[in-house]
Image (cartoon, rainbow, N blue to C red):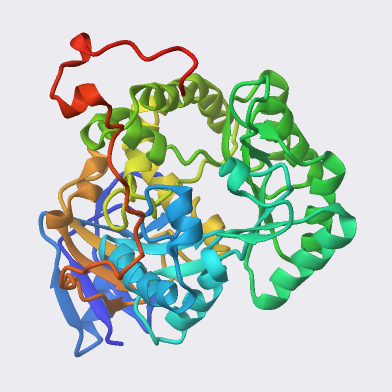
Length: 454
């Protein structure tokens, strides 16, 4: 690890402050001085690596608070649950972690993973065995038998994909303790899920308040925070009452839920990137227009409440849901900032603060990373252009010039294209083939399908 002296750049420090022309001095993996202090100290320190950042911005590396590094971009829960293998998934996850790092993301939270691979990948990166961003990791997400977002694919007991079904206090306590013993940084709960034929539209609460309190109390007694996948006002209120430390999504919030979140200052991570990508680009990948509209409405219907929470002092954190086919690794980690600016009305600097200083909370490293200040770890990126005017600059890989983790420069040379091992992806027969399609008839000339048919 060599000392580093960055000159002629525009510094965004991650605190929300305006950019300023300053030098940056890094020694032993940490930022030791900025501006004139950096210049004076550097003059007495030789030799130093001098990096000219003219025309570029120097800023903290992005932190992505919601990734699924072990999923490998499935296009369905069927693929994710039934077409992955333990050892191969670990090898592939290591490659995907490198792709994330090479996109300028120096830290991620991976709150749940298949085969609990996030814990081992975190340890391998920390040991220098593989290259990747800093990781705070969960183990299996906790479900009740009612389910999560995978509906009937979730079993009544046991493990499936990235989750573990628990029932009753004894199972909850035992599983939370097991995950903490295994090395989990977070405990994740799927508080809401999809229930077929439920009279209410969308996700419904599948945990009682007493069950949520049991999770939080057990984890907190051992010093581990809890986060929840949550949609809906009643679920948000219960999460706050249970003492949950971070709420993912928090959409469909009502006034009483907003009051609870503001009163507790519980951080929220909306994770809108998946929805925004489907709403804006779903047509290019054959997405159902109804699904596209549903996700567009989720953002539109929740933006005002989330902005009110932010204005009242509730921290907003950034997460991209990277790891699915609609959010591939290394592509969309900046996108949440763009949604915060476009739909929530934040300034680019406020959005950057959400993805850096505020997101250090997701890494459990507040005050250590996410800020370009003396004493912080030198997790930095150098980007051509000015993200304080347009956060989309952070998504242009051609503008990303340098990435540093604790002062060590990351090799940005891309890996060779990869293939998929046999059976790794779901193969499909294709779209529905009726006789009209086979004969090339237009939709207008096809005979109507009887109403009793699916």
